[in-house]
Length: 287
Image (tube, rainbow, N blue to C red; front, side, top):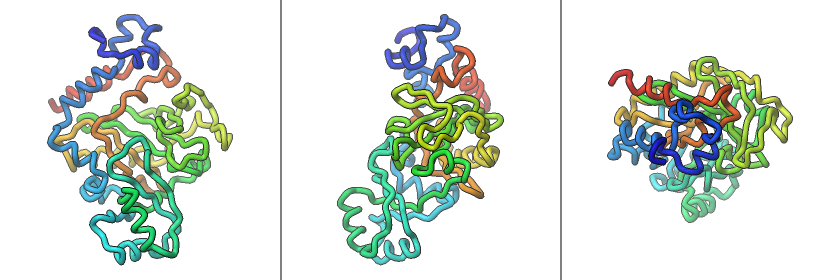
């Protein structure tokens, strides 16, 4: 912990016990990740990312879908929003890791639904983000989001999160799987892994092969996230969640405290070196 900023979870999850000293020095451990957050993210601005409704208001041009915040709306507003919609996504404002996020069918009684959502705290309602057919074939029950990490307006690492077990969310900590995306090419060169360390070269439910997928519109995805960095420049280290639509990428949310647990999983590396040199290069630029 003193030498590398690592706890026992980092030591086990990244298999640091298999590394020599030089290799361990390249791993982004919890301590190092915390230091990057402190250095690049202004505490007075992080509430923008933690309040999902405020985030949607400020980043609306990048969302590419309709949404409504029930505490700022009337039942009549809600009824108009739901017109011609068959399903919507409902979210609480104060939970993370996919908790409290549901996909629901729009009932005839929208007033009753309004009251139910207000009572449950699921007050942010969004259109279902329609994903690209390539990712829909991979797993159709959730939006399989791209996790794009930017540091100092540079894309430093990226991942595809994939739903599993019939879940409507793809979160790695909520039953989903994750695999790494090559930042330069958008290619997936490694199998996916879940929290229980099950490794899958193909999806266990759909049997679609994961290794070899190329993320469509990859340059557009990266540009969307880099452009979004300008909205709150005081927060320079962000993990963006992006839905890849059929025609364009759609921003889902931004995270002001990127989780480092996805970064250096051994199944996603050819060697035992980590990402810290790449992060350090991004931190030097423009500083």
